[in-house]
Length: 129
Image 1 (tube, rainbow, N blue to C red):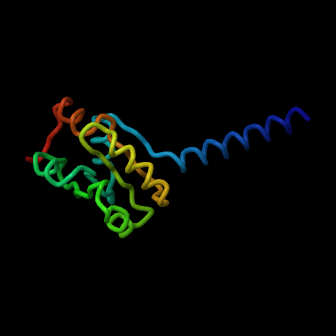
Image 2: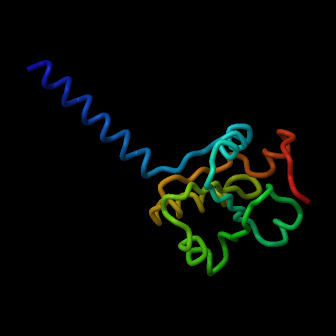
Image 3: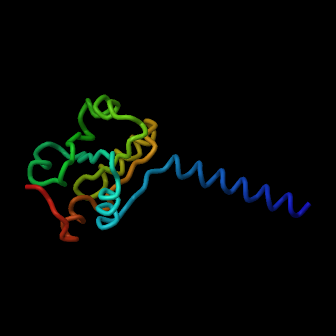
């Protein structure tokens, strides 16, 4: 009986951990974010700031899709739900909001840059200006 209960507990823990990992986006430090981007092959990098902010400096190969724009949902809906999405903003607030939204839309892997491009620059990582 104890064996059965232990097995059941292990199985339920696995299901709940799997369900949580599929419903929550991932947050990474700038160094982790950069390493993850370098290891991916088919990711999409999204800067969710306004256009004028993007023009002041952005990460290389980033697409600018403003989270506050009316067409945010329609623009990101064009991407495959299986494509990993890497998201950032200035300090991490808007990208966290965008990451939650993207997970709710059904994207499987969404990664948020903790601290945004501000933290990225403080880590002396490259920015396109």
